[in-house]
Image (cartoon, rainbow, N blue to C red):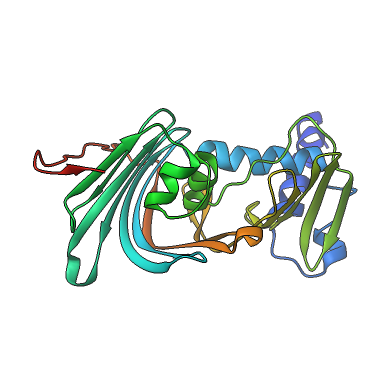
Length: 254
């Protein structure tokens, strides 16, 4: 056996442990063979590799005040740009939302009203209408949830054929459930701090070297708010992403 082959064996085994279809949990999902730092590196690498996104689908929202669903087309560039165009039944244009770190523009074509400002809970809620931050909204449309890269988990285990990492500190606790085949976070829960956050992802799809879920649900149990995104189609890292939009001059500021 050559030195080259010897050096390659650990890398190949790590890949097999993370990506092969499991026959038993003990064979494939082994926290001793797949250290937490390696799993975090792979999860982070998949999320970081998705720079831009286009897609279409439907979004459902629920809150104590109202609820509903709408079709959308999307253009997204991490970490700070999102353009959602909304459609009602029969393809009727009902408006758009442009969301950036320093500015948002929300246009309601049914009422011909426009609202602009600096992103804040109040402003975003008027349009989504959920009390979510910019990061939470971007996560809801990409299904990515950042794992702490510079802290060791307080618990690292295997449960129901998935890796589970828990991070705890005086401010609260975060739990991540990771699918070994795709290295996607399939369940996320955060408690403490500003309130509880729960999220789930499903229907993973691979494009090129990256995986992304077609279904994402984000819930804020303390306030009774829930956002569910379903993609009928999407393209990861397309060659061109446009954030151009037009607000009619006749639009009434709100």
